[in-house]
Image 1 (spheres, rainbow, N blue to C red):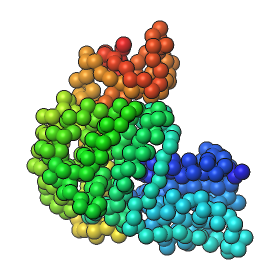
Image 2: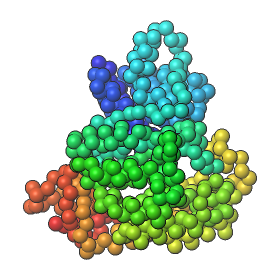
Image 3: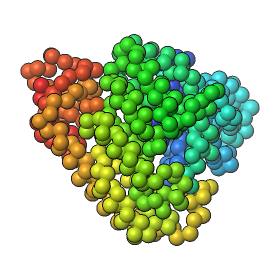
Image 4: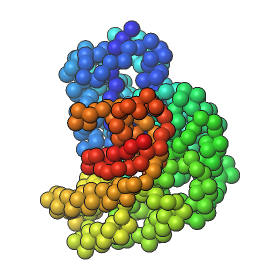
Length: 449
């Protein structure tokens, strides 16, 4: 038996894939230990979305080799896919596996161990396959006890000017519907009550199938899939990952609004509130189209949680463009915004654009938007005061020395319920209804039965 330590960097898709890899290792008899412990094998699921992500990937790989110089250090995923030359030169890496071969981790690893004595010291063995087909992986359980992430597709065809992911993940490849439904059924039987559909660009789900429908006319394969999951026994909540704004049409929203298990929590990727900036980013919508999608959701759902991503300091972003974005964000009023300072990614179109914005300007703009985000988020939560909400109980923990049960509402607001005399009435993984009394912390509401 060998001790294996795993570490994940990056998105929810990466997290899903790492959980499947850990599951495979356990089934083969490997012993999983924390990453900060001495192990025989270290596996780092890498990210390459920015230059910073590349650097973090290298740091974790080097840290593993420093922890145990005799260990086998395995680099997996996006950094391997886009940075093969650097990977091959890195003496901290013994084995590298690309994105569409993660399901082959066990045979690749065991063949490497068998051939190890024949391998020159410091040489890295790299396994990168083609990315023409969807790589099937099947999750039976997850580290969370109540919520499971389900990967439904891989790849992206959008080619935003700042992004390398289509090169790291390939073109859109969708998972077969029957495989997704089988995985969801298994997770439901294991007690998971909520599933989150995730992928690199889930709005594109199914466009690669024979006879695929258009994704922006209300006949989306993604909505077809959601409707079928909705009919499965044992699943009480369905949550969607990041959506392309253009998929939110009158027809799509009308279909989704008929599904009571669907969580009214929609992450619509924005990136900029200025049309000129969006054009340089090669985003395929205008702010007017985006706002129309928001209005459709708010008309169909009661107080939906709408979240987004915003990049500040994109090349060429003038003060006027930034102020235009700021006004648009004030107009929309999101539940949450993830604010990112533009990070140059070598190999992308944006990296070679003129008028790169100075770091100090990015910082000022980022800080302003982070302040706005905090205010808008608090306002969204404040509106729940006095209302009855459904909470999926996920854990029990202490806050400032007081025991609580914590969980999320359907719109993904975190709620704490005092664990007092009524503690025996419910437990982790129960759905309960509470009344929101007030804010307990900046990010957690206090609910009472």
